[in-house]
Image (tube, rainbow over all chains, first blue to last red; front, side):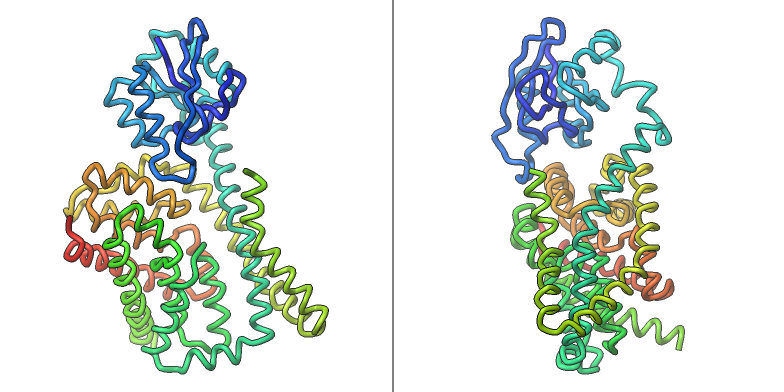
Length: 265
Length: 165
């Protein structure tokens, strides 16, 4: 009997990877004899479909089960379709994970989907800690750029916002929406930054048409993300979606503001 | 890897810091004004950021990617569109991660038009709504959100008509 464990290294003392397939090695191990083989991941983390290689390896090596911290639903469906059980919630080293697996007892393995009791339930300590960690990481990821944008806004406000806004935004609702959409299309990143910039532009007299078009196109139109979108969906899809989104951001801006004017006066 | 991550994330704010240093050397008074203006913006942002954290925590606790996958429709039915719209709104994380997943789903029959709807509705971030409301008001936020959903559906329709496979 063999099981597969996604790990950061090629030894039993290596850490179990948080996500199955997104690691440097796949350890194929006999949990009883502890004899093992480390298969190296040939793809880099940045490439899409990197997890699929390990799924294919697990199927090819005819493992009975897979241990991981987390397994994506797509990978799990492929593995389950090939009668490979997926056990999640594993942490620590490969050796510790195998020991834990052996403690569960091998017959029970066939009927369990994840570590019992201590990890089930959304309000369990582990689930809350994981959610806290994930939320903290997401916020920390956002913060440096937000801080950069906030302090950049201060500079722009002080040194040249008035001249910039009066030259770009003329007061015509259609043209302002177009310029707002153009600006939003160039920028990328967390949309909170578009709210910050939009609010400052509005305080400097730029119309809500332009600000709304900026906010909408910021997220929906991605010149910077175009290569990644093309790789995932093809050039035709990426171009049509971005062009349609650009045009619609102008339409949405005009509709939103006119709706507000209509209902609120 | 952490060093690379740190370099990537801190490059922009450090650049801004350097610009502040240069402008302070040239025009200290105006730079101080700029700094005070930025601090005022940041102070107004602290409360919404705390609220964002709480919302993120709630979403991470209650909604997992496998729930979102379950909701994504696989056909152009009304139900599929509604579920894909909901999935796009509640999805979190960088778009690059979702490109990979959507590509995998596409190989299993996920329509391009639904992918366009999903990507369009990702523009609505529930956990960022408090910030938008604090800046623009709830009526504006609600109106814009509705039009953004309609816009996403319109883009999905464009894709369905023009980028058929």
